[in-house]
Figure (cartoon, rainbow, N blue to C red):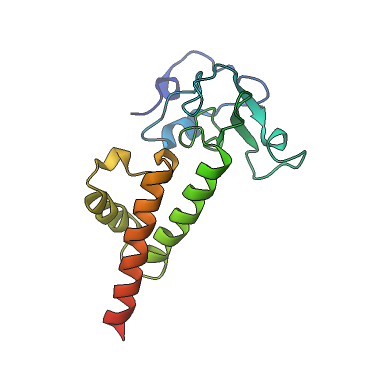
Length: 164
């Protein structure tokens, strides 16, 4: 569902520290997740919108360097560019590492031409036995990441043999 602010005539007031929240950017996010107020990792309530330099030791990353940060367990999640909408759920450092490594293996499937990107997501959805709306690395916990990585590595191993 698209964020209702995308089509509302009311002005959008960007929460600090964001410079703006763009209606066009809000329209691009098809399945917007709610803005976190409670941490899904520790149940803490000290979740704040920050510049990502607070997470990365004073260094900013990306064209839209903002994130939600739990000040209790330091879990974080980045934002869709031009919005205040999270890219996924808050994640601790080990969870972010698991998400990144499992997604890297998955991306090889479509980047190397074995399937289209949407076809690869549909395939992974079936392999994991989940709904398409749940098949997003930004929603995966460490166990789901490990499961996805195993499935994708197995595919790449067997796909390589089929091409030889």
